Length: 275
Image (cartoon, rainbow, N blue to C red; front, top):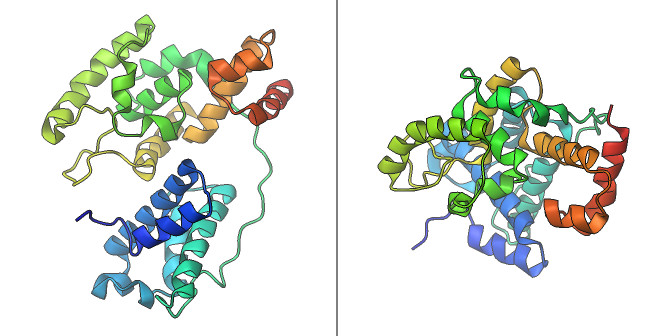
């Protein structure tokens, strides 16, 4: 029997599927709820007592959301998305009488923050970043993979590494990857897993999660002096590409960057507004 990542996961996934929700969006719900209940498991006395979701109330969700803001320093947009995920989940439980409470009912979304300038210049300094030993291996690997056009939701998937066997790397990238393999090989041997983003402690699932990756990225922001959010880095990569290839047609850019057609105008506008 497959172990569930959070209570009523199978039933909730069926409802999301019935709503014709994209697989990537369903994965976001899973990531949010898995992280939420893992946090409760480790830090919340209410849930730790008997692991009953029907005992959770507003203060329990507030505790988790406050941690996201204070410890992980998430932006308001991310806060609102996570709160929305939790709200839909608890409404689902409430509609089935699996909980008598709506612990998200009194929680309010945060105001939209002013858009920050996109840092697209980091791509031009990739060699210096890859050779900086103060940056964690996972930070440098994140930068390298995003510079190759891979968004975080792609390169954190199991078995992604196998797709890189035919990739042509620059000399600096090859040097870094040689050092990285020396770091990752003992973990791969321990977990009997060939992937690159692995936890450093024993776990049933050895793959590093997005919240887990942020624990490596966040401290390194003080070293590089720019945001290392994978989403923001990826936007910077796209803007950098469009600025360096202004002559390419929409069709060529969409093919090269694997963008959705309705995204190209948005990123072209960002590129035009970039300093």
